[in-house]
Amino acid sequence: MPIGRFPFPVYAAFAALSLSGCISETFSRGYVPSEMALQQVQVGAPREQVLIALGTPSTQGDFGGEVFYYISQTTRRPVAFMNSRVIDQKVLAIYFDETSAVQQVANYGLQDGKIFDFVSRTTQTGGKDFSFLSQLFSATQLSPGGLGQ
Image: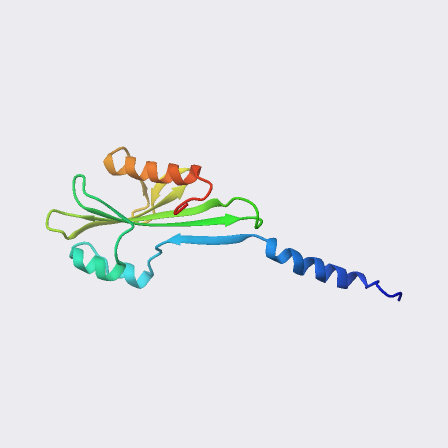
């Protein structure tokens, strides 16, 4: 074997190692609650218990009743120098009644291009909360960086 020449497997291994830094990356942003934390948030639980179990919400709403929103998003970048794209997004919404007790727990995401509640297995119809969620999902789908960018 002449000097400066290596067998093909050595070149292949070198190429694989040098490109491994350029292969796809997945990023998670926001708050993804554990199953144990979610089990502590039942209908009828006080607002304080929700704050202890899940922490401070990403955002809140109080139009027609208080709502805590916990927002998370997963993005993937196929190659290190390309823009990320959203591959999953979830909004955990905790609705409170007038006594500050949990009235409903909903875990929204996108399914077939529509906002879908994974807890009750339903698609929302029109209403004030739906328009907020629609704006949230459409805004992050259009932005290349998603949440926090």
